[in-house]
Image (cartoon, rainbow, N blue to C red; front, top):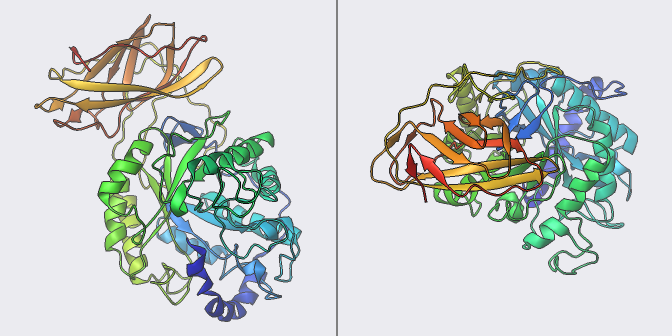
Length: 523
């Protein structure tokens, strides 16, 4: 969230912290390593995050603010804003929360520019963050760690900047990635809320203050490509989140500027509040839905500043329909549910009016039958067709390899003749392998109820794993068949859950030139 809103909390927070110091101190104990706990093996396949069993993970949770700013206050005896003990985690669990985002301060983590000022060393700050992360993971939660406050040179990190700084951000992410890389239940959110106006700056950074392409950044900026490379140079394979422009509210050119990642483990992060520019279904349909169709999207922050939940209810319904996870701001008692906004009246889990709406929605997800839930009984693929889950705390797993399925041809769906348009996009490519997705539109006047998509590869490509459908490959010829939840396509509509796949290629990887849907040639 915009740092200006938080500054208003500092005076009130100090009073709360003086009351809570004893509770916080009782929590800490040595943590020499990050414990590997489920859900494990988080990785990106197509436009979903999966765990080690091949199950699609759509998490729902909260941000726990405080660790970005408490460490900047002089000798207050805590790096946290409120309790971070088992009781507070238990309260989260009663809401159905299964992911928590932990904001970090660049200077406090690195121990530079006089921070931490809270009476702890940088090593103690790091150890306390590790203990908090461990506790969350021990309770079967996914954890996001992110750079929230930073500053260049000798300037102290006391707020948000338009971009990560080249002076310290690479060192920060080298250290953070090395600390947490052994645990694949942890996601790295590279930078909280960029607000440069240049997508080229966002991706590539700059070499000096106000230098092109970062003319609106008063210091040398570290671009997202540099920081993705920094994380991967440590050997970390963790999923990486990248927020767009306009305080992560604008992802209109995220796909066009997507950094290269050797592991293709990138997620688009979006922040959505009722006061943002992109705060209505029209914008979500035009800006966010195309990104959702290509890569995983996580709403790193959502909220509204009116102590109510009408806005987030509309937003969460849209996100659920697009199988997109989200985290609300914030699981912190502030006494001002509108200004921050805050979910809580107290740390036992008693919600504000805004928090009550969020809790009610999460609880409804926990009790509903997961939809969609495709588990084909017969798939002629050497991988596993993912099973989407919605609102379910991931089941503990460790190191499980998906069981291959082979050799049975699915019964073709008998569909109505189609007037159609198909767009085939190569979403990623690396030596010997590639990923691709489809956009399928019904251009006719009759609804399509059940479909088969056929096409032919020209260069010996093979599909190894496909989602949102089943497939048969016979030589170069491919037939993809709908699943139970994406077989219907209204006139003029584009499929919300289209198929996508990972495959192999031998160097030449031409795009197929012709597609047929239910036997009709598509444009």
